[in-house]
Length: 284
Image (cartoon, rainbow, N blue to C red; front, side, top):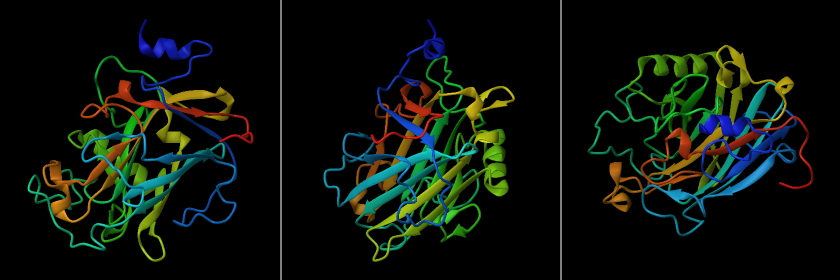
């Protein structure tokens, strides 16, 4: 039986094949300002990382080096994530903006750049729950991979954090779709360094329409009931260049919510996001 048919069965627990899931329940609409205000995310599902996540590069051993508390909810129109990241060294703020040997154009805001090069988070959603093999995100409303970088963005340029077009950058159609979402506000992300440094806050909004296309021309709404979608999340960490010696791009850490090393972007490697129609109970 194909994986996406399994998901359609009553009682199915997973979208991707990785057994980790989150539930987004309806809640209040947060202010996207990079500040987690008292009570603002109390009605959200909370989760933690990166202990127990999958390391693509050097494993994270100390939560003071890199860790996060995350939140997820929706307001019936948009899906919201917040990430409260602890990071002891902020690239381009505590360090020079050094470049990797692999790409001297890493900070260009073009398809030649590396949007994920820097301290950043990536959000990957497969709204269709479908895959046929080892394919990655298509770069449309059905499945996508977007980046929120602490020190560069499409709207603010190099030096101001926010959203960037993610993968697959080789696809001009995906690049154009992502850029349209950013410019139109279909996706928004506020990035702010914590007072005193040592981390940052990201608050991210994803519009159901056009970003969660469950079938061609059909976008998620609460009228569809509880819905499982593929989900992955990545937290990338650059420090001083020497700390990433031996890793691609001299990345220090890159930790993933789901999947396996080197194949974590395959749709079937992802975990599950349940969008729920009932408010959160007392449990996370």
